Length: 253
Image 1 (cartoon, rainbow, N blue to C red):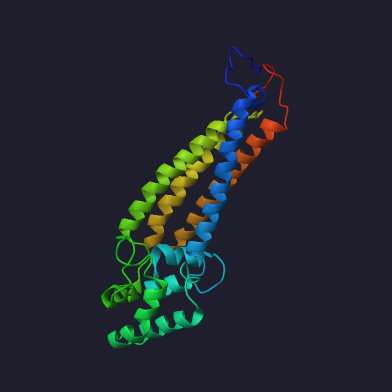
Image 2: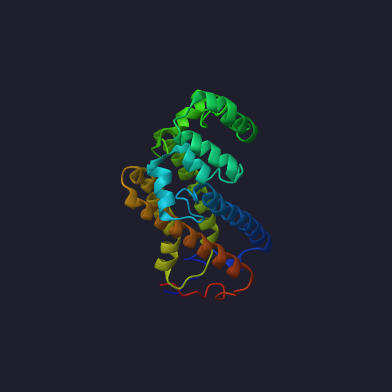
């Protein structure tokens, strides 16, 4: 159908004032940088849990369902905490765990490492982090790794649900000014990240009891990334490069 300003009052990018386009551009650039750092943070937190150097499906499975062949401490030393201390000190800690968690050896060998490398964050002041300044605190992390706890899943889930909803509302609001000849395609691009959020966050819970759902976690994250990239790129392109249809002359199906 042919639209005009009377029956389609919502403006396209080429009809917006320059000041609003500048504001939208700054928001998109900032969010783009934030999304990039979020991807880096995911890689840093989860990669290496399986002993490899890159992020794998097995890393995701270990993060949520645990590693029956190792402890939480070993998983952290091989994964997110691998860069926090040298290889020889990591080997000492892992050998101590495999040797039976002897308290005397802890006081002589392991505690000095914890005091130097770990105390700044794991001093017991943060209830969400294990206390690594005492023997009992460290020993508690040497049990079989059962993955992320339910309390942590609850906390992280609600943070992501609120945060991602806000991000994709803002990006979608800006993208809504884009011109697409096919209305259904534009709506699909805007709806995809919200479907992906449910897939991603929901699969964290299911992966804890069924490891194959780690693939759904990856699919959900990939859909979010692709939809963010499309909305981000199209919005900036149509704001500053693409001239678009003349005002009141757009044809939308």
